[in-house]
Every structure is written in C-alpha cells, then in structure tokens.
Image 1 (spheres, rainbow, N blue to C red):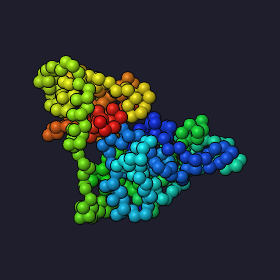
Image 2: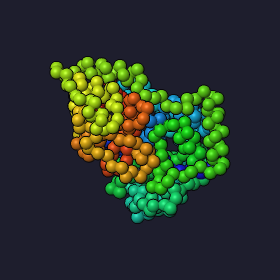
Image 3: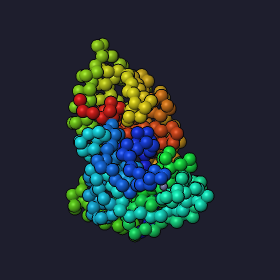
Image 4: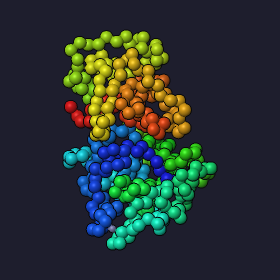
Length: 385
Ligand SMILES: [Zn+2]
C-alpha cells in the first residue's frame, strides 16, 4: 500500500519547547558516547498538562511515536491490529492519567544512510550527527532530498498502515542538540481519519496532499461503514462542554475585577461583522484584558487577551498555503510578545468558535483549543480550579 510521511504541530505535548527538550528522557545505550536507547519507551510517560487541551485527536511525539485519543485507537485496532503498541500517559509529575495514549509503531523502515564523512563512535558505531537535509545520503524510503520541492507529494509502498523510520535525524551539530525519527501512514488510513474528522495529522508535503486512488477510495468507503456499525464515533466531541463552561465560570469568579467593565459590545460586533462568543464577553466584562505567562510551560511565552475594542486590530495574513489554514476565518483576540497570535475561527451557526494559534514563522494556523473557555484553561496551565 502507498504510504506518506506525517507532519503535525511542532509543539509537542512531551517536550518543553517545540520538539526540543523532551520531558521523558531516554536511558543511555552507549557508555562511551552516551547515545540514547531510541527504542526504549519511558514509563510512566508524561505529558505537559496545558498542551493536552489540544482540540486534536492525533499528535506527534518524540522518537517517531505519536499520541492519539481512544477513538483513534479503536480505528487502528480494527484496521491495523498489532501494528502499534499503546501506553497510557500521565500529567507531568503526577499519577493522573491523561486522555491521550502513546502509540509506538512496531515496524520500522530504514530511510537513508548517513554520510560516511560523519565521524562515528568507536564503541556503538552511531554517527555524531545525522541531519536529514545535509548529512543523509542514499535515500531508500521516500523523501528523495527533502530540500527539493517535489513535483507531486511522494508516496512509497509499505506493508503496514503505520510505521516509523529506523533512521534517526538530528541537528547538524550533533545528536545531543535534538534527535528525531519520522512517522509514516498509509494514504488510505490518512484519508479515513480525515473522513471521521480526526484532526492533527497531515501529509508532509509542500504540494497538494496525495489524493486516494480508486482502490484506496473504495477501502475508505468500506471501512467508514464498518466504523459506523462498530459504534465508533465519527466526529470528535465538540463545542463548549458543560465542563469547560463550568471551569470558565469558576475562573471568572476567582479573578473578577472590582469594577465591572462596560464595553459597547454591539458596536464591536458591527465593526467585526460577527457575534462574539458569550464566554469571551463574560470574561472581558468581569476580568478584562489580561495576560498569562509561561504558557504551555514555555519560558517567555506570554499570551495577552485583548479587550473588545482591540479585537482583530492585529490582523492575520490571508495568503496561507495549507488547506487547514485557508479554511479558518480568523479574528485575533490574543497576542503574544513574539509575533504569534490567537484567533477565533468565526463561522456562521457556531456560538463558541474554535481557537487557532497563528504561527508567524511557519505562516500557518494551528488548532489550539476547542473554544475560548478551553483556551483560557490552557493559558492558565490546564489545572482544575
Ligand atoms: Zn557510542
């Protein structure tokens, strides 16, 4: 079957910053150079609490592994039994389980060789570094020269729905800077997941994603029916749950200002040509514009929630290239000190808009929270009150 490489948000639930500084360190395998045991799965496996609030169903994890919600595990159990091992995950430093499972692909594929020019450890023979763009040679699986844009996305034949690279990649300066492995998934499974609105995974390509061929489309249709009859939910849980609403209510009570603000919401709504979510209006009236420090446990990441009069003043570009970002009708409601910002996805018929993070370096939008309440909870560290 045809496989593609998976890309996803670089903000990992199991890393302190982007995909650097993993919070589940690996044991050393080589006593001489200290190279880690890449196939070891640390137990218990910890995640950063605020980041688990992500509205997605799938996310990448360290080492070519991934994180998934129970609904997706049921899909994989049906159509790829035995292809992955699953482990529970826990909020960092606690014994409390998160709603995410760690998925470890049981099958690996050699992607490339590392340039013979790179010095190797005498004891374990691992190279000192293996940068995929400049230090990999003799590509054997997909990615023929990652730096060259492909005429079309690449696909590669494989025997499994899910697999990861045996080859590791790292910083040019050394594997001790960062180290990563790639995740691959069949074209047909990726499209089936898209059909059940499972968010978080994309094909790694600068071009249009690979469309399913005739056979793959037939498979997706057939399996979709099977999922329906197996009682697997075909949509993620959605919108402002009672739980999120209650949390925000408690938060507002605890952080209320002495003088209640009196914003002219009607005028603002006329200016932005949209209704504001009730959760945001309640927050703006009682708490007002405010900022949160060290968001997602990232040092120096400050999120400033704007007052109604400042909504949308900091604009979001409209020249996105990826499909997901293009679909979002963004209205900025929070800024950061580093050029990124948070926006509502203003859509007709929706009361509590989904929240996206605009990442200026990548020029794209990433799903951040299911709604404003869940977003504030994430800003505040993800803890219950
Ligand atoms: Zn070594």
